[in-house]
Image (cartoon, rainbow, N blue to C red; front, side, top):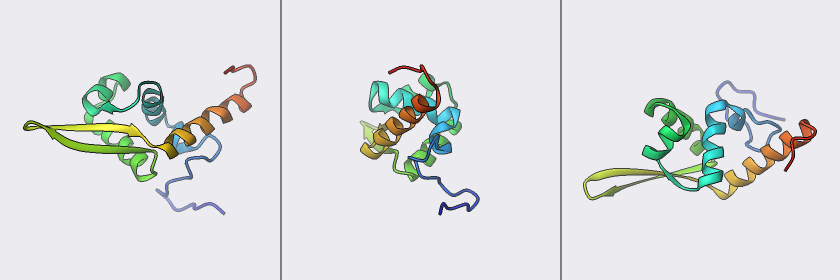
Length: 108
């Protein structure tokens, strides 16, 4: 039985999981799957989001264990790097495979 609590995080491997299917989070995961670990300052323009919107999506993905957010300093400047986790990569691959099953001819 799934948790239907408002605001609950759905399982990331659920068919077309809302966690991944959201346009913003899908853009983030597509970028990270294609490019790999990315600094926040490079991810923001790549997905076309404001700092606040990107932060909210990343927090939700991090809470579900889909991404990690690593904060450090380079000299005196803060640096935040976002990385897809192994579980996140599996959840994203499952999502893509589910799309292929739902949309005949989508291809590999």
